Amino acid sequence: MGGRGGASGIASVRRMPQSRAAIPPTLASPQPQQPQQPQQPQQTGPIQNQLPDQNNTPVSPDPVSALQGMSDAQLAQLFQQAKQAKLPNHLNDVDDITQKFVYTIGMNEKPMLLDQAAFRQFMTANNIPTNRILSRSINGGKLNTTAGNTASLTGKQVADMLKNSRLTYIGGKIGGQRLGAGTYLDMNGGGSTLYGSTTITGCLNPQTARVVTESQLASAARAFDRSHPQFARATGGYRDSSRAWTNNNMSIYALVLGYNVIKSDHGGYHNVIDRKALVLVK
Image (tube, rainbow, N blue to C red; front, side):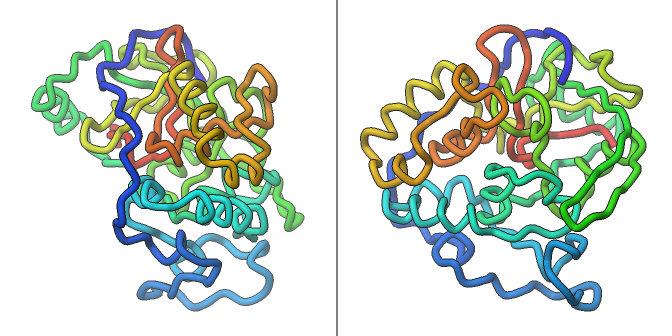
């Protein structure tokens, strides 16, 4: 999380109409996706004891768009499938439905990484002013998993997980989820947010970031519940931070509505659910 900042310069997008676009196998049925070309041997034992690798982590191209082509019944079935998902070690430290949903749909693409010079060029080429730079300050800590392991991580290692890890790790499982579960950054021009010793900086990618404000999301999600009763029954209906500070489903609703970033109505806080929406400095 971080301090206050300026408003986002990326326009919010409306939920796309349902189409018959092809849906990745991970979204269409509970059958596991065929592994890609493995770069390491297949791990054995329960998946909860395994580290994320090419064999046990699904990756689907643009799953947020694929969700737009799913019917009410398909979305409800997908949510139920996600609730039963077994996750690799270091992702299952907390039984979090958003983490399971992101894992199930294969939303695992990485952010764009640029060095300082290339990042400045990207900002200039896309007419992004410096006051729209995002930052996140990070401390190290211990990661406890349900497999019974403990990993001690430095702030830099936590930052590297966001930039380079095999699978998206959804933050917010412990502590407040004011804007839903995800990775919180502050649009403050790139300064330290004073929450940790290691600070990462970047910006939203105009090509991949689909931004919705918290109030826009609340209105759209409640209308979505009325038009998608099966999905609403499966999820228990939309729950925002006013009713479920640490156990809301804001990020899941954002994804099914076609968004991957939730912006605060006040200040510059952004919850980035899909790290593909980011351009980060190496």
